[in-house]
Image (cartoon, rainbow, N blue to C red; front, side):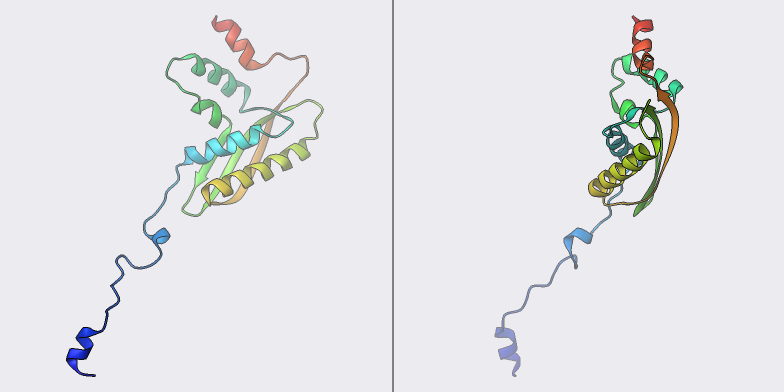
Length: 152
C-alpha cells in the first residue's frame, strides 16, 4: 500500500481516558453513610424496639430537641461502622421487645442490614456484630418518652 492510500483510509479515533468509564476514578463511602443505612435497616426488623444503650437513647432524645441538630444522630444511634475500600464491618447495639426470640431477631437484623448495605453501597459486609443491651418490657415507658416529659 502506498503512503497516499494509507492517508486516505479512515482512521479510528483514539480513545480518550481508556477503559470503561465506570472504572475511571474512585468512590469513597463515609462511615456515617453505612451507619445510617445499617441503622434504618435494623430498625425495620420486627422485635427491635430501639437502637443503642439506655444512656445513648436518653442523650439522643435530648440532642433531638436542640434546634438544627437534625435526625442523623437518631439514624446512626447504636451503630458503628468501619469502612474500607471494598469491605465494611458493623457493630450494632439493640434493644429487643420482651417475648421475641433474640437469636431470631439477631439473624433477621444481620440479613436485613447486610442486604441493605451491600445493595446500596456495593461494599462487602464481612461481619455484623450485635449486642443486645436491653429488653423492653410491655409495661415500661420508653426512654425517649421519659426524656420528652422531663424537658417540657
